Length: 158
Image (cartoon, rainbow, N blue to C red; front, side, top):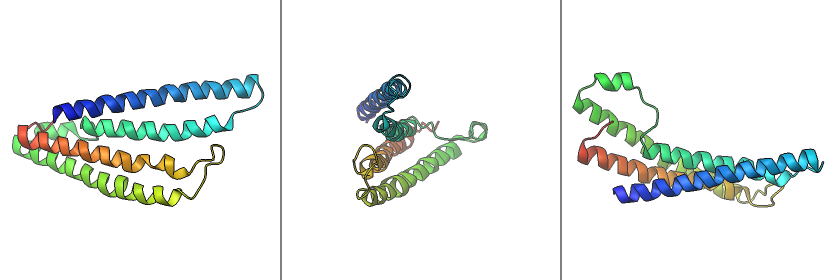
């Protein structure tokens, strides 16, 4: 299980980092074409917007894997071990349900709907860019499953 988590973490870190680097390069290209060539590049601006969504959702998946989602440490510190474990399981279950219903199911629906709409500058179906929602949903489901396994088997709740 730990090896799978490490491979996922490493892959998402690389994808997020490469996305960020590409966004920086494309933004510099935009500035260059707009101010020096006086001929703005519209395709790069559109691509940066979509890449930002992919990077953000890959990052959200990583945060889910690290169990870095919102919590109230003051409350957790005052609870006994049994309640901490129960609250941790509840928290992961809510994250799992969100990932399945909103990210995966809703993401599949919106991706399918958007396949018929084309981007203005790139000429690609918008659904390609919305596909990150179900992909992120699957990643979050895997991570919450690993987190639940860890909580239930090792008792590590925090």
